[in-house]
Image 1 (cartoon, rainbow, N blue to C red):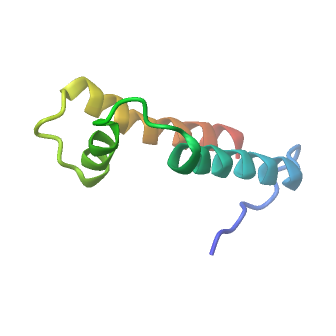
Image 2: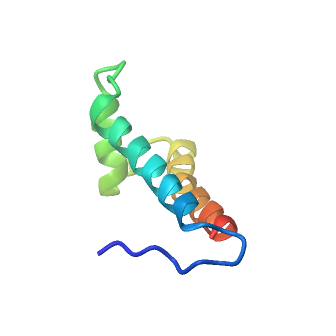
Length: 79
């Protein structure tokens, strides 16, 4: 079950809900509506998610891992 953090003085619950909705909208867009430009893109994404990193360039793996860290940093700063 998804819970919203308790109110912090100066922040409104409406802002939290709006940010959550925006974040979920970006995820839905990426997974369902964004067309794949190159035929190997879906395979690359699947390999990144599954952890099959042996055949992928190390810089791309590092960027993929940081994509999970930045939302955590922003969430810590906002909430």
